[in-house]
Image (cartoon, rainbow, N blue to C red; front, side):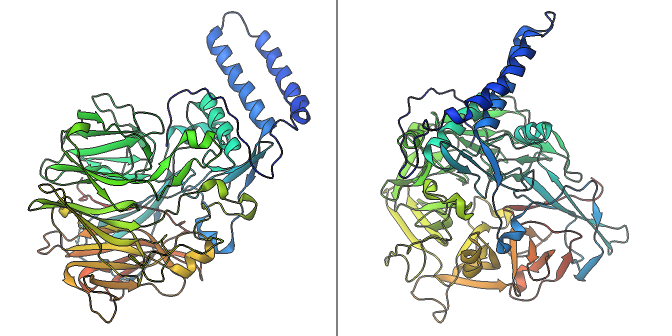
Length: 605
């Protein structure tokens, strides 16, 4: 997250089995002094005709850099063999032509660009730091973001496809800073010992007016005929969809102080874009509505939360905005007291808010629900007196209790998938399954009576995440959903989430009892990948002129870890369990990432 407020703290932190931060201060005093003297001399020799304030500011930056370099030691976070495809790749200078396709790209597949985001940290990978205050480390969702794109262009004969691959870093503010400095500059400020995190927080604020790097969870969306990339804590940037070059920040006529979250939602019917942003400082969450033409911020409101909920997604229906306030929180005061910056507080409240499109905090109708962690919403819609919310839900969070991570043991993924102890069970919801993995879940919120009905839609055969639907049904009732399926063994072995297949959800059909443990679950079909092949960034591609909701394809990046080969699969959703209709071999490795999107663009545009 981006934190934009200046803070002054009186801190009294202690960590068991660690020396006091001040015991070894003398050992680096001399190093600091030797670093400062040349800089002070430089300041004294500045020509008088220069802008004094600018000169002082530049010298101050150098003094802070010298202090950080003397106090903190950066080190690469180790990568296990099973984590090798999470490692970064080089940026390409130009698009590369695809020369190997097994099967065929369907003749009625739309022309356009398939884009997927993901982390691609500079300087060789994610970093950790050590100092007398303790250690800090980057989380696996951090690091500079990179877009990977596959362009589908049909020749004039209407039958021959030209397919190009390209990648490019997202040129956020923090990316430009580190490229200019040619070295790691932002101190990890999320995971590690509380005193070290707090110091990193303050130093990042002093040096860059930002707490941490822009997260790599960059999404791409289209609005009013233009294309934008949006990092988790950054203002959207317009991009050229083919070259992936940044054209500049999105210039919206209106005042918006919070960076956008990476999941803006287009309102059905009006075409308006509903956005929200969160911060560790009040106001904790703001919501805005951008006009259909993309030029004006037509509505903005403080939702008046009393805590910073680490909310990653929201929903829309034809009339409402759907807001998640779940107990995965960011808390600076907790950090000051020696606790983790991010924590899932399962004993705290959880609620879903239904808000009129142009409402305010007082107009939100709140519904108390069972505490849970839901990062991604599948869809929301209105049905009679109810608002129906479907998402991927777990009873624990993979991102939590970060101060307990042992950075000496490479656990730079929050340590949750490599838990050293047993995972608590909840027989009411699961049988013999870990609470960290997600299931398709449904909340029915009655706007007349206030009643809440909630249930698991799927059983415990496979966990699912990164859900998607036919985008033409966003905000209205739909029959089908899709998601990536978690490969439990590969995820636990590597300590990183890996997805060994895809799932098709039939919301209006009942499950076959042979495959499920209890009544009431929906029908699910699975498409499993061969061997050690895992996917990321799956997206639904609607068929032009399709008559049914599931007329289309799933497109996804995959990587075969046995051959170290990256590909893109195209799967016919009408024949979901069949082999992919096309397997496109990519000219270079593509690391695992997060979200994907397909942007249909006729060649004449």
